[in-house]
Image (cartoon, rainbow, N blue to C red; front, side, top):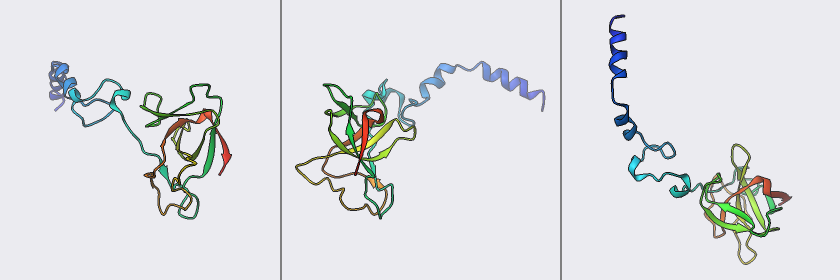
Length: 152
């Protein structure tokens, strides 16, 4: 048995690793064929919905209200997923308000629903369960460093 192990290790070292590399999926989206995947996450247009109802069925679906601060003339980018390379879906102007519904595990991103004074965003009643926001208002992810929590 001990004599076979070195032989198998040598045999494995002789294989052509470039064939294996081509068969591996793109690491950003496992399971997809390599040739179908773009080279960057920005091109991939990954989307992660904002989750509401994380505080349970007795509390508001979004736990706080936030206001964009120190974002400059261009405003705060609202992204489709919680990372800097994600597709930008809109911008929130200085002082703009949004419901803060969730946050990323690393606390760097907030999942928000942008306040719309012309319509009801569907966030006035508690959510029965934790779920993706599917209401009529714009939702996405913003940098937590640029949002000041102002209450609910």
